[in-house]
Length: 211
Image: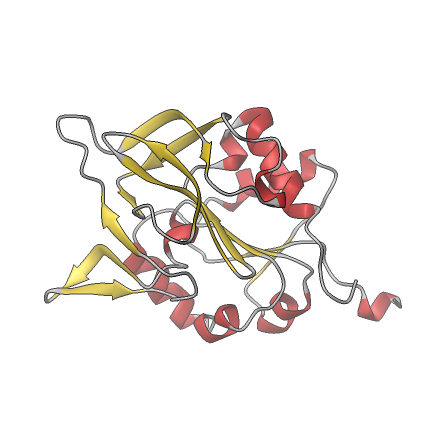
């Protein structure tokens, strides 16, 4: 490829409502300088795209809509990884930010709905380290069955057909989702030590069409 055609190895979607610095540092520790951008052309051109997220589903979707990105993200064909709220935004809808009896519509690229965790007498938000139980072996999860990852969340996706790995906090929920080229991790890989770094490395090593 010529310099003009060079594709970023990974583009991090600049949602304006995410803590991007820790994600960028996590990739830099792996020797990769990610491109942080909200530009549709750059996102389409990147070899892989990471969708971060903190805050609420409603605020995040409003920001994506303001940036004109929902349809851009839905149409991506390269590997896409959502983390924490970014994973929840890949689902059909979220109970978080529901208004008028209607759940918050999300990107709808992964089957499932995001729901408030039902943890009985346990504390919410769920904060801490939990073990991954891999249900389906995939390159993204190579070497990670039984690994401990760090979570901070009050909403999650129930275990379903798109669940690649689950964990348990008052009951099982999806820790990793995957459908087509779209994947998501409910935990924070950038805060999960060597295991989180392994997941990001696996993501960087996923095959990309045309490269």
